[in-house]
Length: 167
Image (cartoon, rainbow, N blue to C red):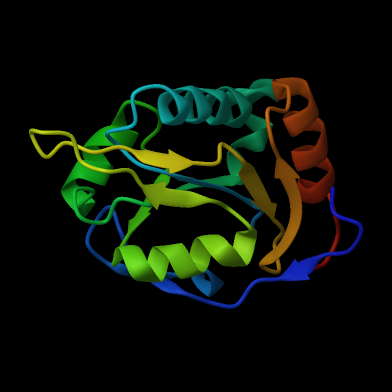
């Protein structure tokens, strides 16, 4: 957990249903945010699987926590692509996509790293990105960052933030 909550400036992206979504619209419930992309071969599927396990743990009591994937690959990750990708994890998960420059700015607010690697001869490309998951509280403040954390550790910290009264 961070020593003090960090206010994150509001932003607007497009969700998996093609509707505008802001950080402010996520207030009211803790939110786990991961910056990734649907064409990711290993890191993103593993992170999303861990988030699904967290979401389903403790008899489903953590389902009150929102899970958001913010795509760093807005060129390929359209709302429809995001929706299809998230369907294999949970229909409750939220996917956000948008202009890559806007997402880079948003990622920087969280201290997340992501950059596009050089395309290969066929034009295919990957992203180098951090595997951190960020926990935002009910008031929209950054409270924790998980980097290679165990599921148990993530569940413990998430429950603490979920169980807080007020903000």
